[in-house]
Image 1 (cartoon, rainbow, N blue to C red):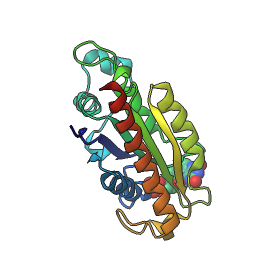
Image 2: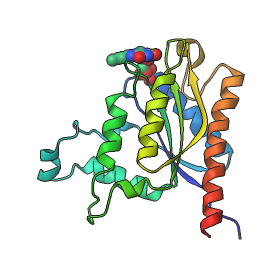
Image 3: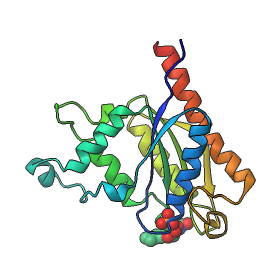
Length: 197
Ligand SMILES: Cc1cc2nc3c(=O)[nH]c(=O)nc-3n(C[C@H](O)[C@H](O)[C@H](O)COP(=O)(O)O)c2cc1C
């Protein structure tokens, strides 16, 4: 019996037109598809959320949270491309993860939606370090939510020269490495399914 294809949810932690990370997430998603995954690539602009506020939650969970929780439920792992803001991950990424971690409509733990799932992370920046420091912070935050973050990661520096369009990475070595992140996620999901079966 063949195992089902790993299902991965992919997003960039950026909203702007021309975002390097919105371009890079396509490279990561392509790598995952090549490695055998089914990828759902979403734009966070389609899931607008206020900054987390317990009063908003108490008044009624935003629809976007419920939609993101459902997506998380349906997928085996995450692919994220994040910018670096002042040496850390953008508030957009943390805020999205925080809202998803809140209790689900049936009163279960939102954190459990992440538990034992697998994540692959990359970053892009016009600077020389490519947003590397945001990866360290994001890795830690994802691990705290219970995800297994694969050790492979890529920070694409000088992104203006390298990420000239969606899914285009003009650096063969880096492209191979980004695809390596995706392949590692697929491998880990497949191994875990194998163990659980
Ligand atoms: C508030 C803010 C802080 C930033 N801090 C950093 C930083 O610490 N390191 C870095 O490499 N780039 C930093 N940048 C520049 C971003 O890397 C750059 O805007 C990048 O294009 C954002 O990603 P995007 O192209 O996907 O939107 C910062 C940008 C903003 C708006």
